[in-house]
Image 1 (tube, rainbow, N blue to C red):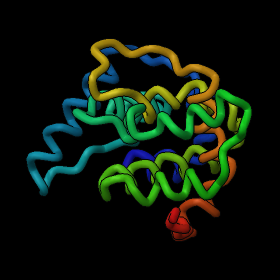
Image 2 (cartoon, rainbow, N blue to C red):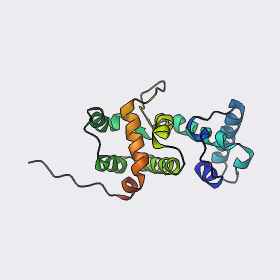
Image 3 (tube, rainbow, N blue to C red):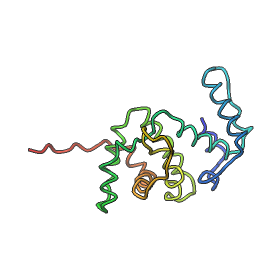
Image 4 (spheres, one colour):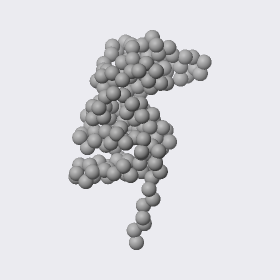
Length: 175
């Protein structure tokens, strides 16, 4: 619902990257969204909020999830390939995508497709939204993504159509 609102308002501005908003508005929107999730008949009037508040609520929603969209533990081999300059294949990102539990896959696709449709370069998006998407379940504090993690998110942003529409390739069994 939040991404639909932002898309409907042609919100592709810089605020989506590093925007900030007043805590009162953000908390008010979060409370309204929480109440609406408990009451199916209740609608949240997103038009009452600036788009930056809606974007920050989306980012906060991802950070507040009990599990990250992508857990660092799931991607260690991919990150090792990037770090050692072996690059990462679209096939490995596709395979990871299909191995994600369905709710994680749905969230990843929705967020990546939304972000990729903005007018902002993918590296900036990966830097600013990456830690909302990729983190460890065991982390007690959030930390900035390192360059290899940022690169992985950037690759998802630049190749999302191929990744989300492809089936993972079958690996040949070793003898």
